[in-house]
Length: 288
Image (cartoon, rainbow, N blue to C red; front, side, top):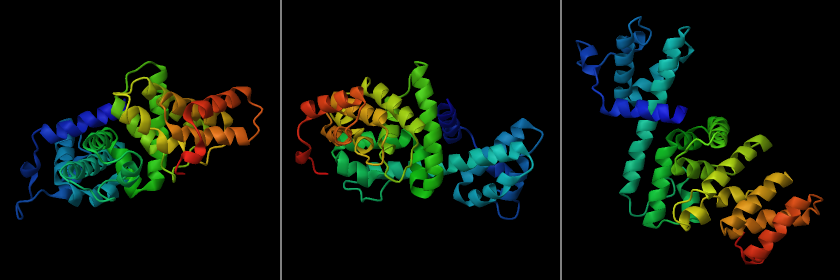
């Protein structure tokens, strides 16, 4: 999958030898960014590879020049510039994640999504570690959540479709990646059509059968998605209700009551709703 390939590329950058100093400007002793940019389109594969790695090693100073050549007529230059930008951003975000680990009481803006996670799941060491693993599993999505909501929404839809397809093909998806997607599906600013909602349902069912310990993972991961109030499809509402009931997630009463209040003629959805209400209790007890 693309995620695995991207991850392998970033690791290679981190551990591989860098050739930035070999391409230094003689006057300053610093790498010449423009020279490196021009080498992205070299006819020699090794030169292209070396230039890309050197630009990634430079980090933030290389971002703007790389963005400028994303409109290049050369598809190889566009591809490598885009890949280098993603790698630089992800490496910077991962440095924030490492700093987060050492914080005893991280502030709300320590990492994207942390404020909602702490409210829904808590900040105990076990929960905090889970959040860190999600950040590592879907670094690009969490970065975009904070920096570019529109691009985040587009990337989320694409990733959800990829993961749904992988699950249907019985491919193994890391648990943390499933958890991260389910958590991000709870972002209120994220607009999802019915097809994307169905993809999230696929991910939720797969995750439900692969949870780690039956406590934090099983109970808390899908809360944000389950309690979203902008979903009208009875089939999606029923699926959220079933997953909530199986996970003993009492917030499943919210979509269940919505189905009942709609006087739905969908017998299956109505049955799921009533089963959830009987299993999970009274919605009046929930802090909604």
